[in-house]
Length: 489
Ligand code: BG6
Image (cartoon, rainbow, N blue to C red; front, side, top):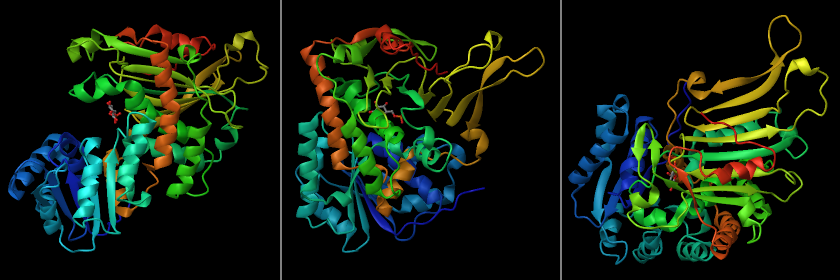
């Protein structure tokens, strides 16, 4: 069965940083896929812009290459590709000085189509670009601006950035992307919780022992020297992706799927996170940095060797988080993320409490607590571990088995990239999967004291060998509580 594709109203998509890495790897391939799915109506146009001088024809060739490099060969349909490329235009413009914005205006014309201004550029340019858009009378009621993380490096800088954008666009026009929210399985988390009767009655401190959220990567620094070393894992992953996942697990049932109904509930969770102060940070948080080791079967350098200089930036973070509200009091959320870990896996584990009393004798074996494992990537799926009787004679022996739902096995459909969903939501004006200003700022309010405590306590990043599960203190963080990290394979 294929899902129904609903075309969107014609729109102009103006990509700042149109020749950059994000446009090449994510935006152009995602837009091509939506063209192929039949979602574009005439006269939808995509206008790339950057400082480089380039003709429309050259930009189309750039896009053709981006698509051939980043879309599977079997998904490249020549006719669709040509129709897509014909939608592309290019205008050279300088986001800082504003040179060339008159040409963007000319290209866009006076139409009252939806305008999406996508900021695939460094955050330092967001404010200037917004100002020049305004100055050139490009912002209409039907305009939206899309910004990518990092939205600040702490609360103060996030507020400043939000103020800058907010002076030219209303909040309902601002789409702050957290691409994790565009992942199919992340959205499935809401379906699992709110479209089934099974879980919600148990989804609280009376029945859940703890929650684990792991986002493990095998990649290292990649080419992001300038950005990553100033950010570190706490800012790069925990402030946004990990906290968004935590919110979706922990939030109350929103009254509807409307953007503000969902975001109000997420905000309450962020505001209920127990602040980790200087004294607690050493036992509630772990910082790590990878050393030389092995990844994907080959030898890899340590972080500082890759960087080419000394650094105390963390490439791994683990946190024991607590949510101070009725639903979650006493239920720890163990969070961990890092680069150059043993395997690439993102998953959420909900561990239920043990049964209060066993009627089975010792011969039955250990009765394990039920676990619900939501695998976000790769091999997306949901596993519900339950105890059953081991088949066959010989008395009552119990065994832990998984009710296993693998997306790949259950569905024939292509799993769309997060950007496909998100870009179309921008055009539709649906903000449910985008972060509201107060959410981003509430997340920083929780992150800043941790960052501050690390500085104050001189809490070092502990070395871990590339290809392992992080520093041993991350294991101790959970094992001290008599629990253990779920073994992801
Ligand atoms: C980005 C981070 O937001 O997410 C990167 O800046 C990280 O450091 C990436 O590698 C992970 O995304 P995904 O979709 O590959 O899990």
